[in-house]
Each structure stands twice: as C-alpha cells, then as structure tokens.
Image 1 (cartoon, rainbow, N blue to C red):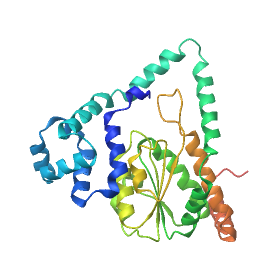
Image 2 (cartoon, one colour):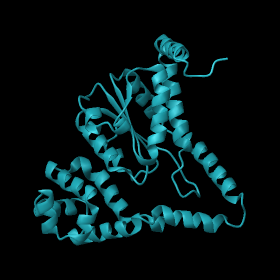
Image 3 (cartoon, helix red, strand yellow):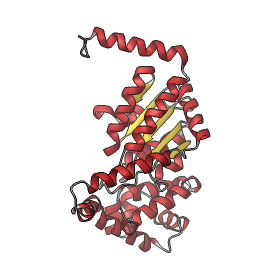
Image 4 (cartoon, rainbow, N blue to C red):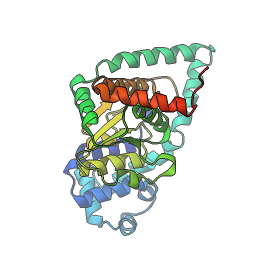
Amino acid sequence: MESGEVSFFMSFETRLADRYDELSGALRQAARYLEDNPLDVASRPLRSVSKESGVSPAAFTRLVRALDYADFEELRDEFRGKIKRKVNNFAGRAAQLQHDHQSSPTSFFDAHLAACQANLESVGQVDRALLEHAVSKLNEARKVVLMGALGSTGVVEYLSYMANFCADNWVMASRMGASLGGGLTGLDNRDALLIVTKPPFADRAIKAARLAQDRGVFVIVITDTHTCPALSAASAGFVLPTASPHFYSSYVTTLFFVEALIGLIVSRSGETANARIAEVENTTKLLAEVWDQ
C-alpha cells in the first residue's frame, strides 16, 4: 500500500493505541463503539450514535479531545474516508501489481523474492532481550492461548501444530467455530496469549488483546506495523517487516519467527519436551497417521 492510500481510520487506530491506557472506562467504551461501528459513525449524527451505543455525547466529545481531534465532525470525516477506501484496498494494490509487472512474466517473482529476502534480513534486528523474555514467559505459562484471524489464521494453525509436539498446554482460541469468550475465560497472570494480526486488523483480535491485558495475561502480539492497535495491550510486541509488491500481506517473516520461537522453546525445555515429542511420534505411528513403509 502506498503512503497516500493509508486511511484516516488508521490514524484513529494509531491515536487510540497511543492513548488507550490513559482513557477512562467511559472513554474506552466510546472508543470500542467507534471501532466496531464505523458506518454508524460516518453516517449518523452524534446524538444518534450516543443513543445507540449507550454512551453519553459528552463522553464522545471528551474522547475526541483526548485523541487530539478538533471536533467529532473531523473524526467523522476520517471514518468516511476509511469506508470509501476499504473495499478497494486490496483491489487497488492488485491493480498496481499488474501495472508494475506486466512487462515481464518473471518480474513480479524476482521483485517479491528480493523483498522477502530483505524482510528476512531485517528480522535480524529483533530485540533479543525481549524475545528471550517472551520465550521464558511462554515456557513458564500454565496455559498458552493462540489466536489469529482472517489471513493470520493459517500461520497460527501451523504454530499450534508445532507447539503440540512439545507441549500439551498450548491451545487455539475459537478454533472451528468455538467461542472466543470460552477460550479466554479463566485466563489470568499465570497464562499467556499469543496473537498474530496484520492489516486489515480483525476486531476480535484487538478486543482479545485488551481483555487479556486487563486480566493480567502476558500478551504477545506479532504484527507488521507499529500502528497495530493491539500493541498497546502487548506485554511483548514484535513488528516484522512485510514489504513486497504483492497485493496481500507476506507471511514469510512471520513463519520464520514462529518457527524460531518454537525452536527456542524446545531448546530450553529439556527432557520434558523430548519425551513429549517422542510420545507424539509414537502415537502418530500407532494411529497410522503417516506413511510408514
């Protein structure tokens, strides 16, 4: 996405992420309604928005000021711009891809390869101390809940598959239609929540991060932009580069990172992990789940 295509709604998300911890309960409620109902905000007067949300007009006014908007109308204009661009976001990038690489059948392949290689080089700059802290917390956690939505679902499925070889306390939230609330219920400061989310951010991922933070859970967020609103709720946040001529977010660096994460966990788990992996392999053979000549 070119810089000129970044929506004003992202600006709202950035401001909210920066100020979220400073907001009162009423202002957080107002902010959550704005996030969940952009069409209402863009098309209805403040009084109607207030009535529908159950939040007073004064609270919305205080929120607008807390986020450094001149007035509610300025915020409304940003939401209108977001709605106009939302549908065409991926389509616009696809059109740009076609325009830039139509001259050669391999030009996109080469450009995407070069971008992914550069992204992987940049991952070397990840804060090692923060990574070590996150690995320690995951090793110590009573329960580790994994969450990904939209395009991030697949990479979290893969993370869960790897983790289940070496630990029995890692689970996916809302898997196969299960309730997200059920997956988060009972979590506290003994537990960890790992979220993978990239633009366009799934509302449920942002809400899950904030709910877990409020309950003292150690929250790990993996994303590709510092504007990700879940980062404000993260105990450890990792921003991995995904620059590419592709129309969709690249998951190359994310896959590398989660593979490295599991490798680090196994390297620190000793005989417990070894025994678990051996048992899983043996059970898999007994169930004839894999081809064995």
